[in-house]
Image (tube, rainbow, N blue to C red):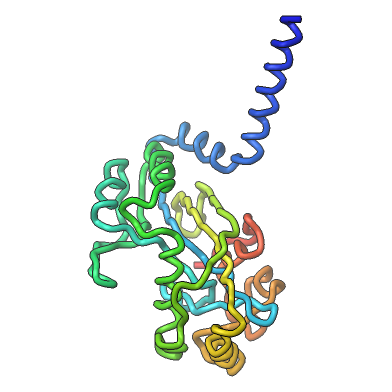
Amino acid sequence: MLVGVIGSVLAAMIVSCFRYLWLHWLEVRMMLWCLFHRRTQIRVSVSALACFRIDDKYLMTRQIRRAHQFGPIGGAVDVFPSGLSEFQKVGFLPENPVEHKWGIDRTALRGTVEGFGLVRLYRMLGRDYGRESFRECIERELVEELNIEGGVGIKHIPRFRHFAYKWKVIEGPKWLKGSNIWQWRLYRIFDYQADEHYDADFISRLRNEATLGVKQFALVTEKEIRRGMTSEGMLIGSHAEYLLTKRERRPEFF
């Protein structure tokens, strides 16, 4: 009787372990990598992306940091001075200096950290303290990327729209041959939930500017995202694949 109970408990524990590994394999893989690369310098980036669909196509904007390619609306989460000091305690070195923007000091959560600090940094991302939330990041990026020259204009951009959480992507650490660095990136992907009535003018403006060949916007198909190039021959960043799947299938362009 006792042997049977112990056997059942052990079997349940084994099943639970395998289930955890299956559901959290990317996190486990990252932790194992860090265990064997404790002093390796890693470039890290924490971002949010919006899956914005119009007429069964995906809205892309010209990337601010890489003007030669298009990508989805989104970007790095901003961290505030109070949060930055906490991240620095685990060895995080920001890539950009703190700047005053949107009425508060902030900088992008993009920089470098050694392997032993990456796990602690990842755990810190489980709370919103000291940084903007991923949804706040999407709201901000929506304004910053659309309210520029050739854009739709800030007065036409809807506020407080619903962004439905889609999934999380953990990428790496992986070795980037072109840059000779290790890189780790975390993305949270959200679906823009359009309101057919209140968003009608906004969507119409985006559709018209994209189809008229405005250089800032493009509406692309799933096939074009997979291929990494629009029908006009413009590059599409590899991170756009995360709108379709949790894993990219082609190398990153620089």
